[in-house]
Length: 425
Ligand SMILES: CC(C)(COP(=O)(O)OP(=O)(O)OC[C@H]1O[C@@H](n2cnc3c(N)ncnc32)[C@H](O)[C@@H]1OP(=O)(O)O)[C@@H](O)C(=O)NCCC(=O)NCCS
Image (tube, rainbow, N blue to C red; front, side, top):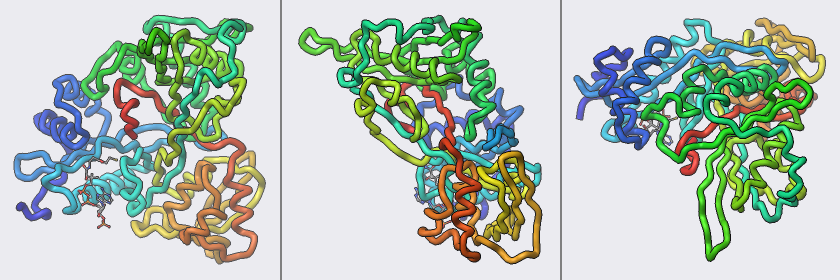
């Protein structure tokens, strides 16, 4: 066995791309495809690709991409989005993941990126690097027969238009941009993302699945698209009775009317008896657009996007807060990036955050600060678990009033191919 210290962690060169892609496929159980190499090659100009190399063999992969995250109040911060993290089964538990994460976070900090984000395949992996769960997701399954929605009331779906991928591609990115501007937790979707999601550009990383259907909702006053729906469905019969499942891959709406109409459309598609709605915010209103919201059962409830605060003053001063207030936070961060005592003064109109010599109101681990940051968790809850400590009485309640948001943050995720059906992170 090679000594881990001699395994080289380094940026990936053009000639390494096929081996790097194959190593990633091994880790993610995805068969190797030339098209994946092409896709990674085009991303390599913009993204940071790291590999772990045991002599000439690629045994670890790691990618981080420049992304943008919307925070409460609507500011958009540059973030480093981490993906494609894998270590070969032959080289696990020898610290290669640790070396790649540490290298990349150091570089992100040096570049001045205030935050890093990722979807964690395993809950226990990333807390040790200062990440905390910052958004959550609920997965709903709607029993159409119990939903209390009459398929003959076609007025309920007015404004919905079935379109082909090209028409969808013209309007859908604009709808998403309108949502992203106001949705804490949302990340940018670039043109390549839309090309892949609509099947206009196929890569090996988007595992195959049935061809999806596309719909838009048009605002009756302006004629502009204010909602999008992408789904696939499977024709299934049982003893002459239809029993088709429908999987929503993407449902984005910027008005309640659009959201209600698109959901009603999905649950009234003829032959469909179950509608699967993955990756929604746990407090989504979607079930409440049904006649009987109990027909939408939560089949999975999980942490979703994890966040790492690298620059505490920049991150904390970028968002707005629920009420006017000030808090002195003593942040513990073993890696040092966010460590220090910070005076946060903020409210609904903005905030400032500077280093201070004042005594702390709260002592908080950097991973707990990540869970508070977008408003998804409460300081009172985190204190029970021990990573947050109230030093000055009343500070937990003040932190909750300031950090929490009226609606939970949400990181909209669209599903491509069979990955959704497997429930992949
Ligand atoms: C998860 C994976 C990347 C770990 O790689 P690795 O090189 O074995 O990890 P390391 O040896 O650097 O371990 C770092 C720490 O994580 C812990 N760890 C590693 N794998 C773990 C797992 N599956 N569950 C819980 N903890 C784990 C280690 O014990 C170690 O803890 P320590 O630093 O406190 O000692 C690797 O097993 C893998 O490729 N899995 C399949 C793909 C995957 O899940 N990728 C993650 C995508 S987000």
